[in-house]
Image (cartoon, rainbow, N blue to C red; front, side, top):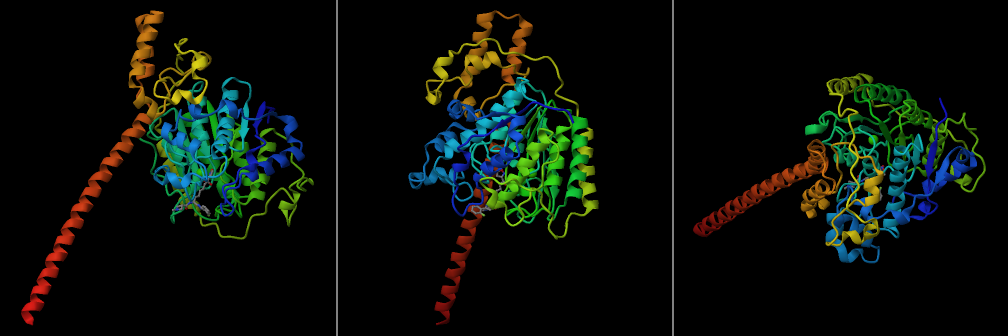
Length: 515
Ligand code: V1D
Ligand code: CA
């Protein structure tokens, strides 16, 4: 394998954040991985960056998330959470995704690393970017879920889409990558592909093989459901077959890989039987496609295995020859008791995955993929013209005040090459700023006096019905259905009550009469 420019994002504070004593998510595992990476000397082969969290905040996060949700994450503390019970429920913050000290800064570290990584790939400054603090795949536009608050993956992909027409997202966490799938469910600009345990109420419960995407995104979501005890040989075989088909038919320009380590053998929340070799083989396979690659962390709850896994995968990504299996002595050496070695042995457990069933799943996925129109093509790109916004006015989170109505600064507009036909915005932004789109087109047209062909391009690029719009439509439909269902249930309840009280009256009357 050839040498590649690898960027590694690590913030020295990340290990200090603490969900709670009983909570299985331990950010300390990222510090442990970093220590292994250093003691094996892997950091010498990469460019090391600390995510610039001072320059990352509400504005960056609301490119996907709603303003209200991000404002809430910024404001909430363990001391004040009791006063915000309604918001806690509505934003699904609580048991799985609790409020802890420094929550918002933790989200910044995770997200800034992924977005900066994507930016390095965009600018050709790196071939591979690694952010083990990222990969928080369950977070939704306005809800936390499964230990995830801000979806760094969606933010990273949005950044990549500024330069890349088609982005492939691959998720080998044992849980379904629902937040990322949902964000891009109706677009062909991103293909999502998750391998996960499915069934018996396993979290999050989504990721059926029949969930393939919707409208313009139909067949651009791939779900491979798996069962307990999955071993290296079977996993790698079906991973490679599926990814080969995905790569052949989708031909992405960039890849994002979520490497959740809860799919490893002996994970506290997982039920697969993979070793570092099997998990790592998938990473190596993706690397071999030589596409701009953003590699992210994710789940993983037996922390000594998480750090082993991500250190080993870092070595694969920098193409370091085999690491010594004996772990070098370092600060966290004692965690690796009783076997102070890098690699894991599989456990003696049955593999409940029947190869014939997996083959049937693969065939179903293949059938959906083979009919894909190879789109969107590498067509002409539209670079938004120099715009309107004076950067200094928009450098702080002040933009969220009602008076401010732009999401991109002049510098951003000037520096990014935005693919033709795409414009990103958060749903709230659109609601609040419906007029802005129209006004800015008029301004642009006025200011630059474009010829009509170019005008049409601008109009198209701004008027595109984007994915979040569709997600809103689906959400609206869902809400409508719920209201109808609730009304029906209410009516049935009333009727039942009336029937019961009539029945009671009749019984009482009969009792009186019999006396
Ligand atoms: F065991 C726990 C102790 C304290 C708090 C939470 C948990 C816990 C274990 N498993 N929570 C879960 C999962 N939640 C549920 C819900 C509770 N029910 C009402 C449903 O089963 C959540 C598992 C999240 C997995 C996250 C992830 O590994 O996919 C991940 N990837 O990137 C970041 C996290
Ligand atoms: Ca997964």
